[in-house]
Length: 334
Ligand code: KG4
Ligand code: ZN
Image (cartoon, rainbow, N blue to C red; front, side, top):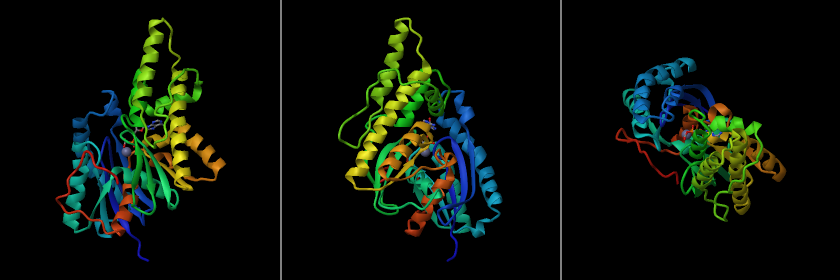
């Protein structure tokens, strides 16, 4: 069978990324230009700056992705692009580049939801087996998604307030760590002990999550200790926070797997890089005979390879967009 090459684009936040993906699972090239250091100065992503930097970088990244793959636009079968959710000014740059190339070279344009991309990052590891449960943990999303087959997304639970990555970044700020704080909290947690009492967030029978309460509990605990003249032990607070987060994520996910009689679990999104989450899920899935897949670290955070993997299945299913495809800051996955 003839190979299918997808040229894919991701620019929903602060990474400008273009990739070439073969048959939905083989990464031929994946160029990621991160703006993280620039935004770190401001303590978070500044949308206007992100958008301008995408403009400066996008053509360089396209050229590099094609050069590294050793192909030209003539070899490409389709163009896949993240059209949402994300920062509107950032999304527009990748989208405009993808639409322009689609028009000039007469290639089909395939719209991809950012979270579908995170889920399909797992297809770059090994073929996804269905039915599966996907735990999506990123800076903007925390969701449990049940999939009976390719591209059939059934969101069975989601966060009622903050996403887990957002909570990590806010706790990092309380601990005076620089942006992006998630990986730094993770590192500190590793050397600390679980010594602070924090609530288990939204410990109920639903598949929903809530992380604003535990975030506030961390802030209050720090203020109270400071008022008593006590120094907070940062690594212990990081460890106590991470332990509770991992506890609720594993509790609800393992319950969902059980309720749906599902034996395949994948973890997706930037927070799937978290070592506490990776270790605990690996242990539990081994014990309970669950087939677990977590992306390689480089495919956990935003990248175009994952968009190309999802885009391949969307393309095969006949999903197409016209040149009037617009960027959307918020769109549902289901
Ligand atoms: O998926 P992603 O790259 O962007 C969104 O689509 O949101 O996720 C970024 C989020 C940030 O909140 C970042 O702090 C968090 O993922 N993150 C982590 C770790 N690595 C990235 N959070 C906890 N532990 C990590 N090791
Ligand atoms: Zn993301």
